[in-house]
Image (cartoon, rainbow, N blue to C red; front, side, top):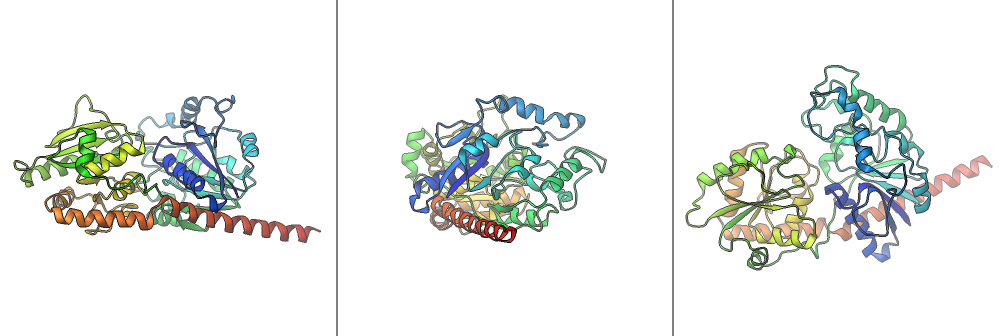
Length: 433
């Protein structure tokens, strides 16, 4: 079975890493008989199975493509500076797809000017689209926050600060509605929350939607002796350590650093940190020029990309905090629980798919910083409880989020779709003769 995964990046960003992990799962399980390749706009790995058009004139300058794709947004100078993707810029992928010769195409995160809206109707193969955020069924935003206009036809977009019905969001939505009619398309979401959002959207309400959680290599992401991990990373040996981490951890407001700050300040006032110091590690950002005051000693770890170092960091600390405003199935939370690390998060998005309240972590009421601080304190102050939560976190990762299980679920889905497609083609051929 020949499968082509499409992703704007191969290993850059959370969605790309999720897609690449699926690709790795196919490679490691030979008995699945899945021959997978990835088609990307920006190739960062040296994997020969990753195809890129970077040497072709049409795809050779990804940053320029992104800049050009963003041009329609300049009509909205007061817009939020969150990611918003028009995806209008033409892009010819025919030769690369012919080279891969797939039986099925699995779309992942395809923005930053990679695959335009109109292109999907040109694919001759059945499509499975794995959603990593809400963009596929909105008028351009990737997370809608409190807006539910994607359930209708967008327009008057709050992120564009628009007051017109027929604004850019309505135009993008109409493009999707026009060009995606009658596609041979199935939707996969990693979280139950995103499946419900997709099912409530006007664009996808009539499509088959299947939930398949992301997976990761649980032989790499596994518990490592805490003291050993701290020694290797040169971290304080006798402090309680809290970890916060995300891509652009201090710059992406959706990740909730502005809520973590008051929560940690409240925590500092409630804990007896004179006897055992409590400190915070921030992963995914270097120390800014004007760092926030968390009330705790703070260590900035910078951007970490390799899995072994990440596993060491998760194993070295006592609790992971994820104060996101909206999220799908955060890789950081998956990685943390696989390493046996309890997680405190707000009960939003896909967090409840990974965190069972007071069994492997703590789910606080959105966006109650008092309860969030209580959840951290509840875990830090009881060593026996932490061990109980740690054991259950690891068990959940082994049971539900292994790379092997993810690959098997996708392989089964692809086989069913290809078989159905061949049957329909045969029937169609018989009727035409």
